[in-house]
Amino acid sequence: MALKVKAVERLLKFDKESAGKYRYVMKPEMYSSLSQAKVIKEAALRSGVSQGVMKACWDAAGEVIKAWATEGHSVALPGLGSMRFGLRSKAVENVNDVKTSLISSRRIIFTPSVDLKDELQNTTIQITCYDRNGEEVKRVTSTSGEVEDPENGEENQNGGQNQNQGGNGGGTGTINQGGENGGSGDNGGGDDNGGGTLNEG
Image (cartoon, rainbow, N blue to C red):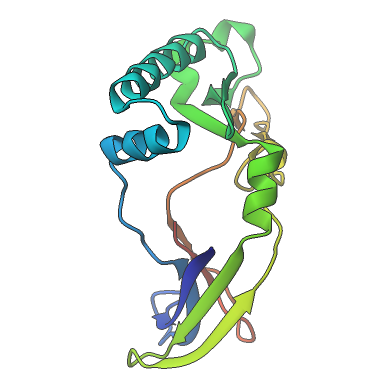
């Protein structure tokens, strides 16, 4: 079993006036989404119970997880890790300024189990490199690698708790409570000698 990654040569611009430079950008190959019905069918085959029983258990577990997580609990996901809710909010100096409008977003935070992290760490990654014309030019294989921990992310980066206290006279900072930051984004930085980075997915 292996994870497949593509490294595609793309033109990256570090500012509006720059002509840009070509860099190889890596991103995971997109797999098709598996439906709930397919997952339930496979789980039923592996456990030896009927699909009807498995669906009932699946639905019940989902309702319990949803109910307990919204009550503020960190809920175990069997064989996977745990899930909890968090939030992003602004920090204020005066207690009289604390109000719900300071909360900018609510979050769902998944923390993988040790077994799941070990499995991912030991999973082979196969990288296929394509030049700007779409031609395959190289293949690279990695047998192991570090797994990011959403509970211990670096300060002021994805994950962990980031707090920037405001300046004088009641300025505000931002507190990001818990967990990793998913999704995709572009980090355009770079200098004359180095390339920028493009983080996808």
